[in-house]
Image (tube, rainbow, N blue to C red; front, side, top):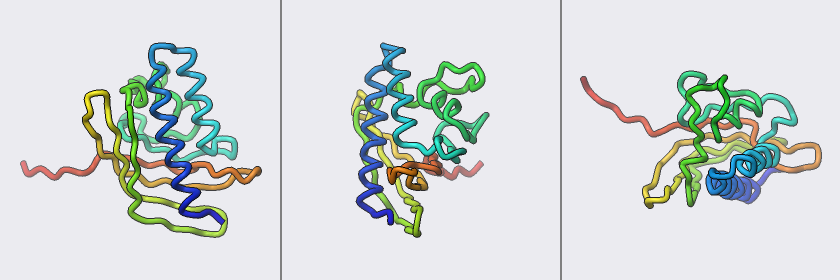
Length: 156
């Protein structure tokens, strides 16, 4: 059974991984290696497709494989020209605020906000839904990742 503590640990690992990737942006080889490790350790691409809707993707807004996810985080893939490398901002701190959870026998879902802090100390608020499953070794991984910027209504 997946627990709230399990989810909080993977969220912390996700945030730390995002910060690490950004810290390596000036060393492309190390940055790519860190991104590969991040995706292998935290996402369930080894089990098949992952439903991934990144925060700032609008042209190719849905990503289902590791190549597409990697492009979103560090850019450099001509098949995804809109990707500038979300992780390369760089972010120096992350924080999750979970609004709610759904727990089932072999999977779980969390929803809420996460906050990213940049080098200037400015914070970005991002809404998310994450789905989790355990791999064959029992390690928790993300199989659903939807994130977006908060909705702002404007009258015209």
